[in-house]
Length: 172
Image 1 (cartoon, rainbow, N blue to C red):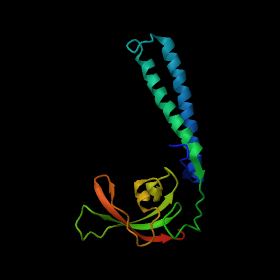
Image 2 (spheres, rainbow, N blue to C red):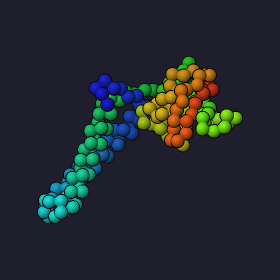
Image 3 (tube, rainbow, N blue to C red):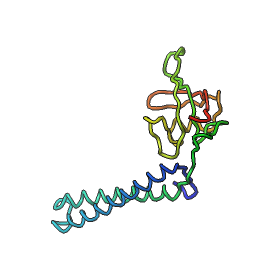
Image 4 (tube, helix red, strand yellow):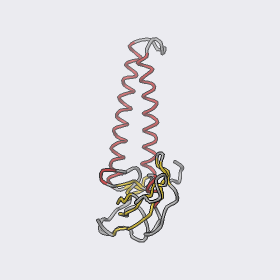
């Protein structure tokens, strides 16, 4: 993430990120304590003390994760999604959008898959609740589109798709 990168999150997403960061900081502290105990229990070489080596690796990984989450939190900007007043001119964060996904790998007579998604904040995707973070590939392909617009080709897994915006709903 660059110095000027902003990410947009709902209040729930922001709170979840703060909770995740707190948990990872606690895990980091626990691993540091375990590493110190492992160091004191036996030799300091990798062949003498594999547990010490394992704890060092865990510590390094958690250190990286804590730094990454801290940076994300610093760049987070709150966004309020008003369910009764959603963006309707074009697809944006907060939009409730119905789409048809056309599979370009199938027969031309394919009817397409109709879906409705709520566009939410950074990394707030919840498939079961039909919410997709604006940074997810599907959402990225339709952000800014209007009803009737078709996205550029999007590859998801091994399938190529075109996505048509069929409706942008003012409320749920």
